[in-house]
Length: 246
Image 1 (cartoon, one colour):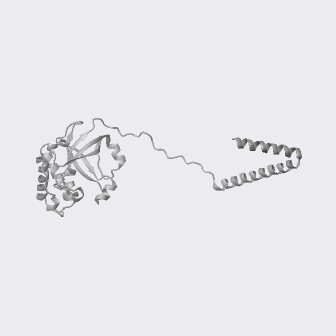
Image 2 (cartoon, helix red, strand yellow):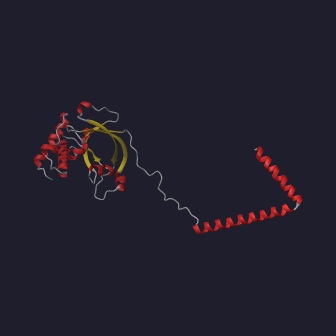
Image 3 (cartoon, helix red, strand yellow):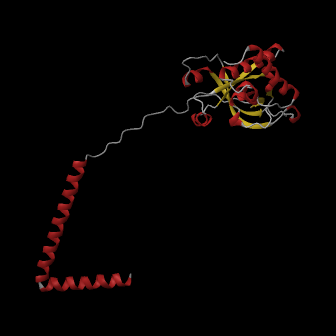
């Protein structure tokens, strides 16, 4: 941490005042280029404390950069987190007043409603599912406080003002997480051994060759008999005509 408590409190007041007065400001890293992650989260905590001091309750937490692709793109190795107070939430189907926002944008989100506290360390997907009551689709209205805001250049500001969160809209009905079909390992299919396949192929080839020899010898013997030869010639002629007509 590079900022003292007085500076952190002043920056928290500056950023929250922008939200309350619906105005933007220059980036705080322009004034404090050496600020780090601890500074950003300390400012965020100070903003939450200011809201709670006015009687607002914590409504939920916001997770960002949750995919490995996005973390790699932003140059971080873990997700980032922010808070949501009750004044951010709007009723399902309600209206959002644009006059109360600065630079609003909309993103779809997935909201997990918990039935018991979720704490780490050692928190994994099974722990999350066990603590989840149901899941809701949500619409997040993000609202940057920064003038000429560029997302990839203001990562610390993003944390300090807890992810630009301005409003959230919750769905009316929740979806229960359940296992529909238990995963089953695929059955191992029996495959014939290569040696057996080769032996059967050789046997089939030999039988075909013997059958051809017997047929050929039979035809040669039949051709020596004049009566049989005449019948074979007539059969050959009939087959030729039939094939020609087809």
